[in-house]
Image (tube, rainbow, N blue to C red; front, side):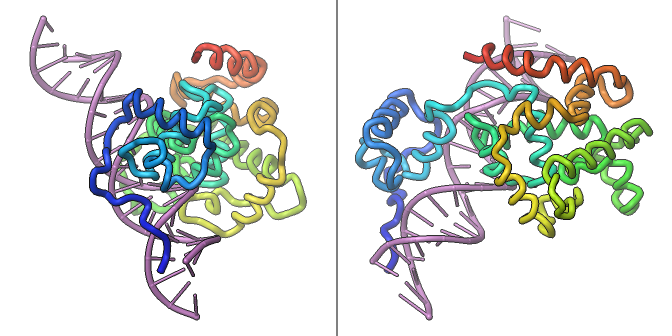
Length: 250
DNA sequence: AAATGTGACAACCGCCGCGCT
DNA sequence: AAGCGCGGCGGTTGTCACATT
């Protein structure tokens, strides 16, 4: 005999939350704290599944949440962490204060993924698409027919090297990019250890000192057009960008 | 101005690991 | 020790808003 079910799916409301429901849930959590989600809907007077309440709270109602688009620095950080961790959105989110896994996942799927594809980078493996085509010539996928120009190859390599340095400044063997893909597992424990042991705030600290910001700098005009001058400019502007964009969103 | 297409985001679904009974 | 539910996670879908034709 285990526990009682989280909710008897009969009479459980679905769909978008109303402001009334939000208020009830918010009031309940604020006065009682987060505990035992199964009982929350009953005690808070909600006809929702406990799971739904938890999701609503963590993704929307939590007072420490930032709202609005991810900032430049956050986006860069997400890309870097994704290269290391794959689709482990909760792990990625844990490194971005005020952001939820759902939010980051959505942003990845709607923004970053497309940007990387546009730049000729596979959003799953973070490898240049042209390079992948050489390896697996059988794949005639039409996802992106763009060829990767030479300069980007060099830049991409700098990303790889940079990632290695960031996460593994210690003597442990640096992870390969393939080991970071959603399916790959190889040295991930090492990667994770190095990430979790590193308590320095990743935003700004990680990216402002690295050449990887080229990824985002190139996003708007396409890979064929970028110039290298943008690096220094953007790096020096990054902190301001972060600040201004954050204040822009309530 | 209306119809259609596209993008963005909130929410749901199903699976998994852990801990409780 | 085994079974079961809870909480958490990642993938997917639904819906709304905005852009384009």
